[in-house]
Image 1 (cartoon, rainbow, N blue to C red):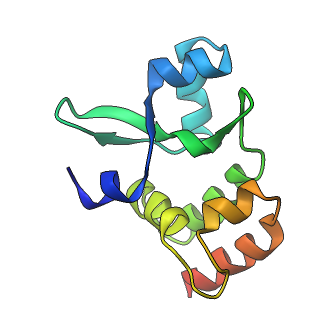
Image 2 (cartoon, rainbow, N blue to C red):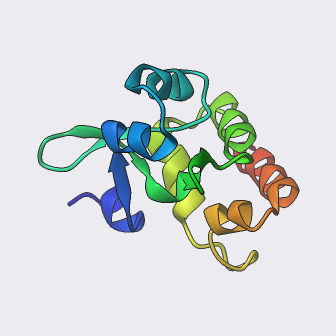
Length: 117
């Protein structure tokens, strides 16, 4: 198991994401392409997967895309974005993904912009 797989407590493969969102798999691929979701290959079978916490009540976490775009525009790759979102930050306190899920997107985006420098 990789460090990233240990950092993220729960993953969904893309067919599971499609089922959770009640969307065709092609739409899930579109969500990844437009940066609404981030996926990485994990596990023994090297399957594209998404952290479970990126979904909330059958939808994609609405504040995720803007944060992902800020980090991606700063040169972060998909693994780096997930690692940043799931790494504890003593000054928050907690993980950026938790703050996003709590509705604190402005603070997290500001930190994402600062992380780029």
